[in-house]
Length: 297
Image (cartoon, rainbow, N blue to C red; front, side, top):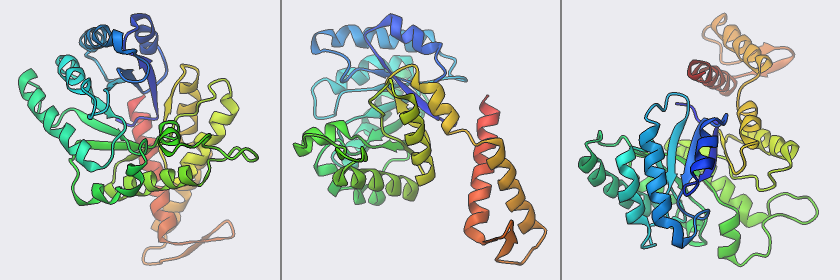
């Protein structure tokens, strides 16, 4: 299933989870971490599991759960409590390297046996850059990472705290400052090297939908696909930005057609531009993406 938008919803709010089910988001992330206070953890786990169990049809909207970090004593109780609801995946925050992802894989394998779920059915999305150490360990994902890892995103807010930065954006341009650009680039390149989905970082100014749209389009141009939403109003903007337009689809079809009409040629001309094999690959990727989005809707 193609996931363009993933909307955070507090796991301790029945009302917000119900509203999330009506939202345009392709997936909900039922949150047990930052949006839930320590004294409401048990309530959040119970309500999250109930919502998962009450909504077994995930054909329109997947249901993921963000647990607490694995170095927290809250994480294993989180997993044990929500796995009876068979979440589509687990969002793992504040990782240091692929070790945490592989450890989560082991926990999920045991819990899937307990719940009678197919082995490997619970996927993982890791938030790969929320700690200072994480910027130095992306190579570990290329060396040994579970197949459960299907997506990776990066985090600018927690990373700023970890680096003791007073802000993560340049005061004049509004662009991410250098350490955060590095985090973004490493997340993107590692995701593509692993052939998993690189997901854009949250856009914290939820009232600025124009700014959100611009950042989504910038993410998409760079190679990211999809974005995490922190407010219900952001989902439709994200979906639209990550859905190829008719003009883009039409151009991609023309690129594919002209190469098919000229078999054996490595370069062809179209509209005054010279095209070669990377352009053909990009066109085919876009058409495949458009087909997947069309099929899911």
